[in-house]
Image (cartoon, rainbow, N blue to C red):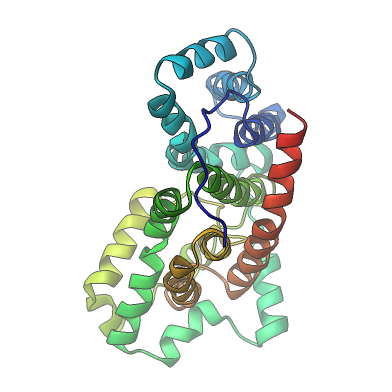
Length: 300
């Protein structure tokens, strides 16, 4: 098992920075399509600035290095953790980008047909109906909401137990998973069953966790961000990252990941294919991430 490493000051243009810069450029191509928002140039400027900073170009690089030289640990910590703070902002812009390309067209009919072919029914509409048990519903909705803990808690625990090098690897893997899903959401948007099928009702709707989950989604869900399920993909990635860097953490995260995947379908938030594709994508990217990180570091 990897052991904690000594502290290394963070430079500008780390692998995660360059990955974010590359994503900013790819995502910005959506603004070349005719249905872009009225203030598309604000999105374009933000993406251009992200690319400029992410690639560590001057004068940003010189300013960053000066700050690191003066406050190495504090500034390095900010640099190591800022990608986590970007996640909500990147998520919130997805509808504007996918509408720019598709003008409100979504690919749910394709997923629905695949569900029928594979399962002979729609699991996201039938699972809760087949098992209308309030304790089960509350348990699975709780697992679904654990997604937010799964994003933010493991990096800090890995940092505490395995050091800065492990943290940088972990954040890189996490952001690789997020960005890959977000590209799907931009260029192949799927709404998900929550927009097309009625939510599980009856006694299940009386559950407090059920109600909380629906309030959160109604307040902050981005349309077109269903396939593959980033909830499941991120949970699987975090499980495998924890297994690599601090194995005691992998067990609870893995259990939550299974419950989250079931809850995503049971609650009618995702198609079953969304969950399966998210799990496959998350596992693949978590496996690839250490190799990609090492190669990017070797080319600095």
